[in-house]
Image 1 (cartoon, rainbow, N blue to C red):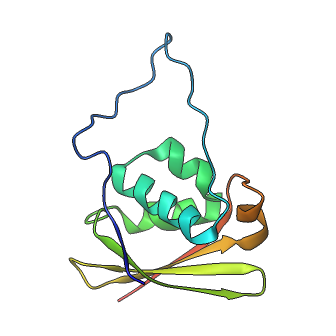
Image 2 (cartoon, rainbow, N blue to C red; image 1 turned 45 degrees about the horizontal axis):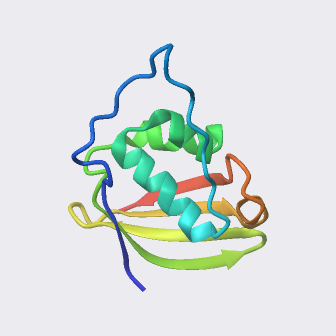
Length: 123
């Protein structure tokens, strides 16, 4: 099943936190594919604090090194599991590039932070 990931907040400006605002809690989906989708959406929106909530430091470094040009154009193309990791695969509809997002199956099932531990891009 092909799932399209788009910037859900296209019409919403993301404002900085002021002293009067309370930090928002993060809901972590317990389905690994949905968990990966939330990371991809946050990355596409440029929502760094949300990306930091969903991904490990190593995964964040990969995203940072890649850059986020065309980051709102990813379609989910598949999901597969191996050795405790669920790999969620995406294709960029603009560039044709592919991305595999590795999610700790157990951490996602438990609704834990930083369950995305691996991201790999290829042409």
